[in-house]
Image (cartoon, rainbow, N blue to C red; front, side, top):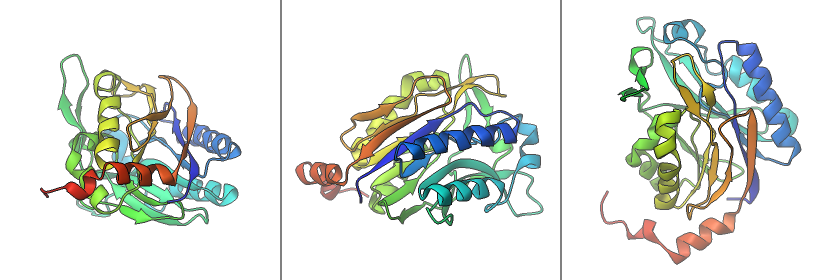
Amino acid sequence: MRTFVASAAQLCAGPDPDRNAQTARTLIEQAASRGAQLVCLPELFGWSGPGAQESSVAETVPGRTTELAAELARRHRIHIVAGSVLEKSGDPSESRCYNTAQLVGPGGDLLASYRKIHLFDVDIDGGPSVIESRNRVPGEDIICLDTELGRIGLAICYDLRFPELFRELSSAGAEIIVMPSAFTAQTGESHWLPLIRARAIENQCFFIAPNQHGPTAYGFASYGHSLIVDPWGTVLAEAGDDGPATVDAELRADRIEQIRAQLPSLSHRRLS
């Protein structure tokens, strides 16, 4: 893993894809101008609207959103996690879509796509009440890959509550986990920070969590507080609950080496 600057962005996406794209472009360019070599956007940053419209706005991967990320990655010679998009399933008999995160390299090439495995079907007193599986199909594959910056694993939002996914990423060698999110304000207030710190600590990796903020079409608000956490659980950078905004942190390769050498818990595992 190299030592480099990473940036986590947050915004409040709406049903106007052009406006969302312009906000994302501005945030990426601002982060790149400050020296960020990895810029990460939130879940569904390009479009957020009524669930009934999701199949009609779903796109292909590669597609419109990937092309935007590729253009900016090439221009600034950076890696971009292009949040996530609603991806057409490719099955004519399936009207639902995937929720897919994309990692784009500095040459503009699509390095990886991750389809969200765990779908947000909840009914919490006082909200939110969401049945994500009504409009979306779960993914199946775990994604962890080598890049010029280090070995990166991908997750999305509700995945955070399933530690077995992150253990799989750790076992696959993840040094950095990026988790685009639209985590709700109500659950976020209680669970966002402790769960992210726990995943970073138990897997001894850097954790980047760009989150949406503000009102949504579903009648609840997203939490904001985009985070970058180190392998000790130290919060290196945190945004507020509004935006648009980006927060930056230096990810030091020697920090992982130091922690894993002093507290080699990953090598002490006895259960699989």
